[in-house]
Image (cartoon, rainbow, N blue to C red; front, side, top):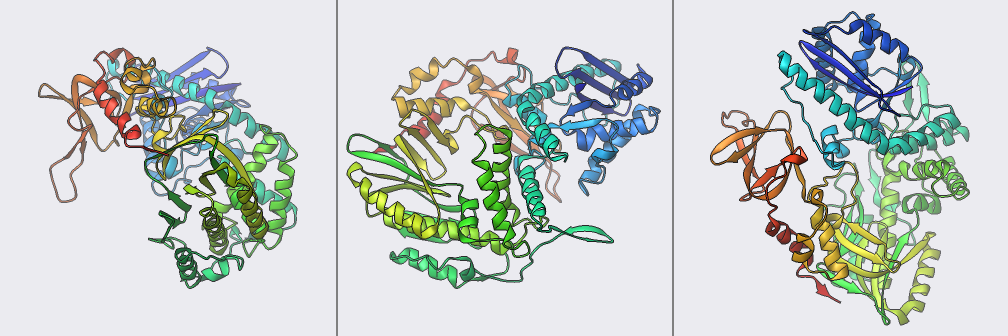
Length: 610
């Protein structure tokens, strides 16, 4: 049996709500001043042996509490359960693994949606409340009473409903994650290793590592203190050793960058590319740890009978560089490259969409980033620099040649987009053939019908088959950890740019009012307040709202700085009013369409056609 569950803990109140993953069956248990379901909860958990419990952050919080409860034979009070919860929260700041219950020790198997989605990563950190907003639930609910409150009976009733609401929200997100869970179950069954709570990056690294070990390449050193990863530590890295000899330039700016790089000896990878820019053919080519970037600004390009927009992308860039150049972390030897080649060959044998294809893709792509991770078995910063510098130099070489046949629109990490006369295609064929022969890399071609570029980070590209690629400010099919506020702006902007529709009429008749919604989130140490007619009132720390005619001013209040006593106040949507509506029934005020029109105009007006 698989259930979705969530806990709430206060000094005089503990609750566990759960629902069946595949049906409407519910369980609710409470230990409080008004109920004592300890025996029933203990019996239910005993019945769950052999089943699975699905939660959000349950490996770090919910399950360790239940694990202790089971270990104590169900003999814990609400005060003891609350104390356990607070210990878990505070100790995580010092050691996030301190209270981890490992799979072999768990009474009941756990599936943690936060772990699977990698929301425990600092750059992707996402709460269940943010997911409620992103999933567009009718009700977005925050913790109703401060942590540590002693609840009254009426307050306990509110927390019961809140607990059940969180379970429903978790179940909704579980349904989103179900294909990922099934993929991990297939991997677990195939390899005999528990992948259930692994994020994609971790799966990729472990599959690669398993393949290395199967090929006889050791990844760990074992001793009395346990195992430690084999690594290559370097006091210095001469960058000349990271750049292939085939890298050559004619353009003086690219030459300058090349010469500067080959003269550098670094002691760490951070900050190597600071302010490293080449000015070539009217563009600034910016070299950085994330790759080479260049772009026109505020331009629209249209293909026609004479002109075309051609995108050239390096196929599987980072794995392909390692394979073609024979790069490997020194401690892993040539067997690392052989494993890369084997996995790449295996992947093409499986159809796209299959578990095997997905697994091998993760394995191929996950290793480059790990090579700069001081805790990884792949750690060798010279390998990191070899891959990134080779990629940037190779793209710069290609860009230099392409400037002779057309106008470069942008360079973006692993590809180049160029606007050129169709009659120049034979020259493109020759340039790309020679470049591929020199670098050992392969290019994939995509032809665009229209391309609208605000800057290097924000653009729309429509393929000749009608498919649309969106980046930055024009994205609206966003990932779950990204801010999905006011998506109507990007959606209407796209229609304006690609279909030439009028802004105002399109916006006024836009059918999905949820697209107007934004969210503001403040930490529990801060406060969010609304101010209306001179009256200030508390709002939930995560508040859904839209810019409205009338309503309240939103203010974020942050604690005083060290040595100060006054709380700091910051306006949200300065000089505008908003309608908070964590429940959709509260969305009663007229939308301030003029605000959204101005935001759309920022993405559409001022574009120069080509």
